[in-house]
Image 1 (cartoon, rainbow, N blue to C red):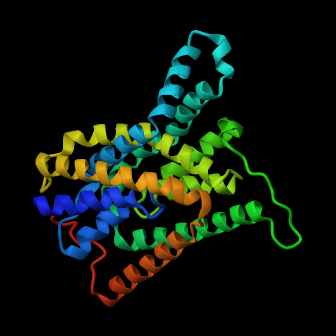
Image 2: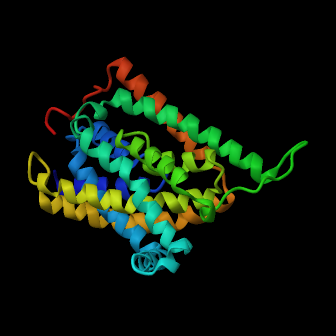
Image 3: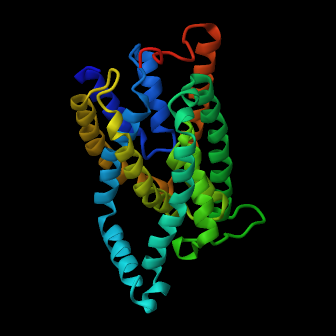
Length: 290
C-alpha cells in the first residue's frame, strides 16, 4: 500500500465512520473503484481506532463520568441506581453480541462478506430500514394531520433489553455495507428513542467493540500488502477527519432528517449492482491480491 492510498483510505474512514453509510463498505469500494488491493478487514479495524479516539475526545466528559460512576458502583451499592453507573453496565451488555459474533464469524468477515454484491444488497436494505425508522421518528416528533406529538425515549429509559437489541444491531455491522451507526441508530429509532439519544448510545457502544477489534487485528499488520507505516498514517488521518465529522453530525441530527443518507445508500447500491452486472466491476475486485 502506498502512502497516497493510505491517505485516501484514512480520509474515507474519517468521513464515513460516523455517518450511517458504512465506512467498511466505502473503504472496500474506494479500493475497488481505484483498482487498488482490498485493504482488508485488519486495516479497516485498525483505522477505526483513529475515529474511535475522536469519540473518546468528543465525549470525554460523558465517558469520564460514566467510567467513574461505574467503578464506584462496584463497591458502593447506593451508586448502582445512578444513571451513569447503569450506562457503564449497559455499554458492557450491549457489547456482548458483537464480541461473540465477531469471533465466530471472523473467517466470513475477512472473506465472503467482502463480496461487492453483498455490500450493494446491505447498502440498499439497510437504507430502506433507516428510511422507515426516520419517518416513524419524524411522525412522532412533528405529529401531523390528526396526530399529536409523541414523546420519544431518552437514554434515561434505556434498560438491559433495549441495550441488548442495540448490541445485536451493532453486530450486524460486521457485514460491510450495514453501517455500525446506521444499524444502531435505526434500531434506536424503531424502539422509540430520540435521534440524539440513539446516536449518542451508538457512539458510546462502539468504543469497546472498535478498540477490541482493532487491538485483535494488530497482529495481522505487516502481512500481505499492508504495512505498519501506511496503516498508522491512515489511522491518524481518520482521527482528525473523524473528529470534525462527529461534531458536525451531532448537530445535524438534532434538526435534520436521515433521508439524504437513505437516498445515497440506495443509489450507491444500485450503481454497484449495475457495474457488477455489466461486467465493468468484478464482485471480488482486488481480493486476490489483498
